[in-house]
Amino acid sequence: MDLFEKCDTDAGYFGPYRHAGDTYLTRPVLDPQPGNRMLFRGKQHIMWSVNNYIGLAGNEEVRQVALDAVKEFSVSAPMGSRMMSGNTEHHLALERDLSAMAGKEAAFLFNYGYLGVIGTIASLVGPDDTVVMDKLSHASIIDGVLLAKASGAKMRVFRHNDAENLEMVLKRESRDTKGGILVVGEGVYGMTGDLANLPAITEVCQKYGARIFVDDAHGWGVMGKEGRGTADYFGVQDKLDIYFATFAKAYASIGGFAASAKKVVDWIAYNARTQVFAKSLPMVYVKSLHKTLELVKAGEDARKKMWENSKKLKEGIRALDYFVGEGASPICAVFTPSGDEEEGARMVGYLREKGIFVTAVIYPVIPRGLIMFRMIPTAAHTDEDINTTIKVFAEMRNDLALKLPVSQEGMANIRRAYGA
Ligand SMILES: Cc1ncc(COP(=O)(O)O)c(C=O)c1O
Image (tube, rainbow, N blue to C red):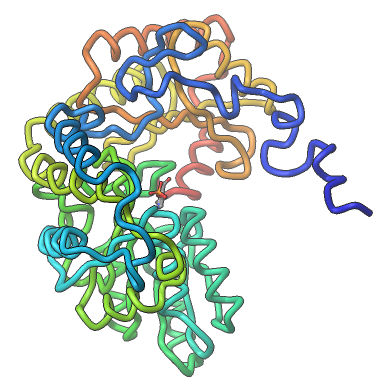
């Protein structure tokens, strides 16, 4: 059989949509300028799918720094990987500032969060070691863990956000593992918006001598004092062995970093293959991220507005009998019964026709029989955006005769899956 035969079928991720050449539900084509309103198919939509938490996308001060950097360095500098010819004082200075913000001794930059997570986990976990992963972890964590497994490490999974279940796993693994143990998970779970129970999870890790890695993609810039993240919010940042974050969300840029003790960061810098063998982060990002970092630190007013908007949106949609996740992050996860994919697509289409852009999440990411609209309230949203959205959700409930509220059984499923 020819390797490419599968490409003619509707197999693979979202295969039927790919096969039909869809650019509506999957890979929707949007006007690039991120904000509370965006053009989709030439028509303005209220946007709930971009992670512009504190409204920094398009910030004029960042734009000016970026323009100056492009004037000075164009888009090519520096050339080569950090290890060979791509290291600069500016990269080192940014790493120093990031490590200070994250309350760790040192930090190492990656070009993407996704590659950073993979590189960090795979660089540290090898034969004889065990990696223990939260069941609802992001694809980058799963791929990092699989790479570690391929190198001979043992892989274990614990029930989402369940410190007791983690303890059961660690009790056994701390006895059976010859090497070390790394526990991995997120700070804010980006799909459902629930926070990792870091006080309990870090305590269990400490008890069994396991190291802990937290990918705080959705918490960095959002949670905690000055946006220092989810562990800072819980007062346990010092209990994390490796803090990881990306610039693709609240920082409205690109790249990521791992922060830890200096010797660990040095190890990662020399062993994380996803960066060792890749060109270093371009100057335009390195320079502008310094400015972004300043703005995030000083961004309390924007965070306050984001929280207010999140509360208004969650309360408004909850009052319509949709089930809204109870996670303590700004993310608004709206669950509603949905018989099949078609019914889900009808709801997304309904919202889009009415100018509301949301992303839908279906089985297997969430329990069967439900659809989830994952909405990101930001500081850039207005009361009008929120009120119009709530009104359209009310119309959808009536026009599509949705079976609301979600049944007790459905809610129990959601709670079991997410601890929501
Ligand atoms: C938890 C988590 N980790 C990593 C990533 C990947 O980050 P990046 O977009 O910077 O590659 C994401 C983005 O979706 C994420 O949500």
